[in-house]
Image (cartoon, rainbow over all chains, first blue to last red; front, side, top):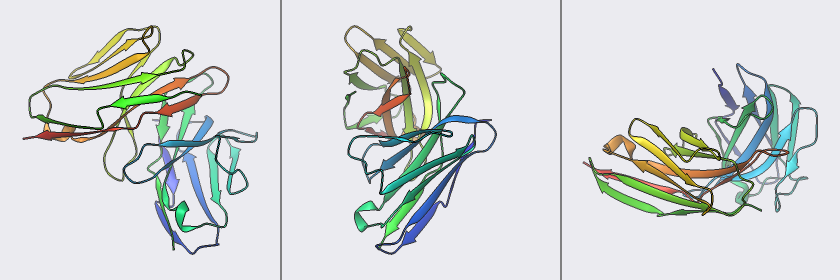
Length: 116
Length: 113
């Protein structure tokens, strides 16, 4: 159990357009979901933390109007990159925890975004 | 905020030798320390974790030690195999309030056959 999926696995979009990435917990209810960005040969950088039904908490330096996060249900969170630029090209990974006070994070397979 | 430093950034070992990766953290409120293995283009895979009330944990060839006083924790891999080659990340988690995870900078481990 504890499977997290992401869709799409890769996407190419043109500069100035928006792209939505979905993160789903397939066999558990995710009280908290996390969104990370990972540039090549770098570590995972936490972008934001979201709890179902409430506004996401963004990390310092992450523009909340550019990276829209919606945690509409206990099994789905979405990240929308608005007005994408080439510098937004990255590997975006979501994760989820199961239950309040849970420690372990279950990661999705990631989404490779390329902005041309 | 939390700051996690990880060393070394690259590590080459002969097959069968041991590998040690070290991390330090700054926030004394961090209470959960997972280690992840990540292969190129794939998701991080949890390999072992330790909570702040435990000093050492072992799972077959992998062990983690934690020194809360010094804010150090280390990953030990014994009898390394070529399939252990990957990037390893440590992380420090503060589970109070809302959970916040800070990752280390990563260590690229190469096991030479």
